[in-house]
Length: 173
Image (cartoon, one colour):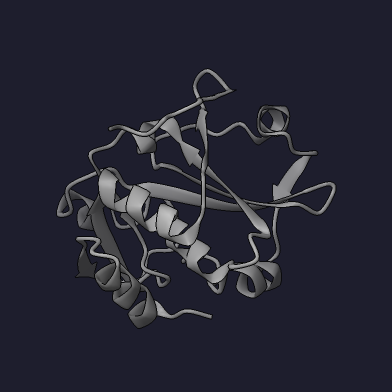
């Protein structure tokens, strides 16, 4: 599994501009508001889910986005959704609860996890995620996020959570 230094080296090797801020551990949305105020860009919440057929999903959304899991599964083509176990998260994404992040897709070379991206986040100029640990926040441009995902071969399923629909091309150009 890739570690935080490996992730940063990946960004550097792919010419992805990034900035990381160290801070106290933050485990869930609503914590660390004072930290967020000091970091420009959209802040995130990330959900690791498993559906009733055993398929795995990682949802990265803007921290203010409301996600209705009871209505989401037919939109993304999943069976009924529930949270994945901590053990499965570590096995597939190499992170522990509280450290879930879009950057963890670097640890899923077999693409067992389907990546779902909030349209609001896909349209944000700057985005912020934990760099595989919840004691820091890494910020990058939307172009940097797109470059990261493309380098991994990950094409996100972009969802408008307000309209509960898939967006064909939700990225800002």
